[in-house]
Length: 356
Image (cartoon, rainbow, N blue to C red; front, top):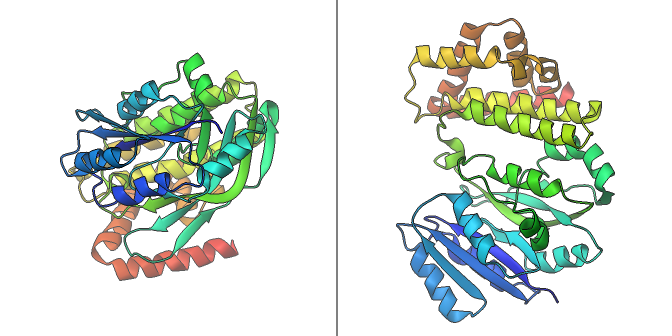
């Protein structure tokens, strides 16, 4: 039974940390070390980490000044002793047989195991979940790369927490999380790691519970230079596949569709309630986005998205900056000020999407 190092970066997670830690300690697979990296929390998270470390000798705690999730994970990896490495986010929790099932799959001689997961609606405390059940398969390097675009578009590739890694690959190739970005660092880590994978296994078991954050979370806050970040990630994925000589028509198609969705997210970012941008600044950024070469070269993929994506794709194609601005302004006014009407329109659009 090989040792598994589970690394949890922590910043101000006192409300959910007990659940997360216990989900790891209560695994059916017992040969683990749990590395808790307290990234300068100002709540009681650090005390919670110390409390558990005194109860269970499998726990190691790192206290560091606030430096961000990438440095926290890198510091965890640096002290890890396990044959395998797993990453868990402090707000989330894992099923009690997750590590057992992942290690069993790894023992088939693969370099990476990927599992399914659930998005749990944390805000409403309901049992509403979105299940991401991937098709079960074992890929050699070539087959995995040929299917890369579809897996990437289905949010199977980019995340850390539904995977089990070999520490020897991370160490041998000095794979680190980039410390100068805080969005997409997990994807960049995975691209580095997957470059050296000869065999990848995907299992359909839903073993990770990703707690969907409410509108006050980082994922719903204005992010400066968000478009530049998404553009960089798009280029990195494309570069990865070109280096592997696998930038096929199919991969280009799925990556283009994914990028179209991300561009919609870039527009939405401009209208978050905590954005202090003026109308003119928003229009200037919209104009910059719609005239960027990475957007124009992928404009054909907007027509494969939802009604909203197709509408904005048409407007981009016709360079209608002002119309895009007022379309988005109306959408987010309804979302933040007239939520009932917004949700009704959203349901109607979903119905039309299903019929399309």
